[in-house]
Image (tube, rainbow, N blue to C red; front, top):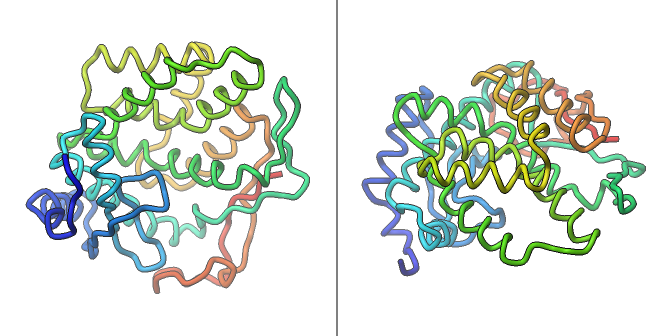
Length: 277
């Protein structure tokens, strides 16, 4: 598949995604197309403008890895409407799920030494987003909408297996990468539009790096949250950092002005946000 233009992405699939988002999550939002994404995601909920962005370059990459581009666009847009609905529930509950503060003394300890937590700010932010994704895709699956990004994960796993590290540092880095991605692997396994054989491959790869016990423990934790359950989101997020990364994490008060420009439904002077120690 060649490079998408914005016009090509404004297709029936794009409209279908917005329609499903309205029907399933009960809200309307603007959907815009951009050529390049700063994040490794096909689409994102733009929390500052309360709209959905879909990225042409990421659609092309996922399609090259085997995804059906029409289904991918539809699912990605509908998924981000789920984030938009939960944004309103987060605001009502006094929780900001996107802001996080990493303490200067935070250390990510491993068998090969420790890393400074501040060097993993981006990975921590992506992890919290992946924790939010699972109940959204479970909700979509109830309407027959399956996760289309799982096919690209299969391609990525094949690449990782071809250059599996043999040195201790490389293996530890792979372990950390797999821990950060584990909530998405659980989502792909549960809701991916892939064969049962490919679901087994995802589980086998992940357990070969992390162990069967970690997979089962994480699966129980991540799947325990229902869509819109904000209290459980706080519990799951702090538990994941504690149990799998051995890091203390708490939701603590932060002034609204520190969160930047947000839509009008964010009205509280303070919100609880994730602090990592």
